[in-house]
Image (cartoon, rainbow, N blue to C red; front, top):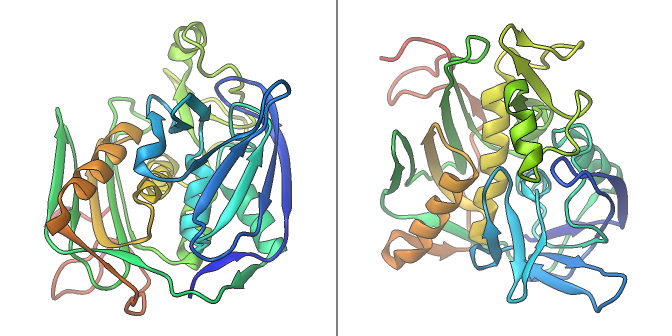
Length: 310
């Protein structure tokens, strides 16, 4: 069945890019509402954007939603990942600033707030997008593909950075609320010290700090508290993918594979899927999720993510 928040939630903080403080209020909503952002302005009427691939205005370093008049709210991916990861189908998100607060750079504070408020079941069946055939997009060396998968929503995300502290990392899991809480929610956004001046000159990263971003210089991670996971970088990319794929408008019954992906590739993947009506079906039943974390191999026991390729 569809779900919503059991009660209203308020959060406050600055955005990682604009650096502007905003108050975020998450409110319960009726079945079939979806996730709706409502942006308030001091000198004009509020404007709203329903989470959909049609509402996307930009995907450079963050996912930006808007309406016909332009951009409304940016950096929505961590909050969308939380809704998607915890199975919250309907909510109204009121915000009085241009960007969702970055908080600690992960989704863990959103998860804690929603867990404290609770999730309520609604009188309406949840619908899913069931993948019927492979859909693939490529962007240079990067690629993403959605494949049929009957056991829920499975992520297989791989990154490849030249920095020695990151290198090549993979994360694979069949998602569920418990897997999301345990494996992805705490993974923080990351960036490189050498890029800070260039990004800030372009209007990005003005709210970035060691309290909300894993920062690397030539020697490695400079945050005093280090990493939360040895592979926190790929886990954060997987977290972003959970949020970006929510732009499909419905939860996916699919296996998503990506290599060197990001917001732009994830959004291209959603567009490619929805452009091919023969690639998916809207269904209202899902098989029970089989929780796994690791790289599955057909006909074999699941192996750790970092095991050699077979």
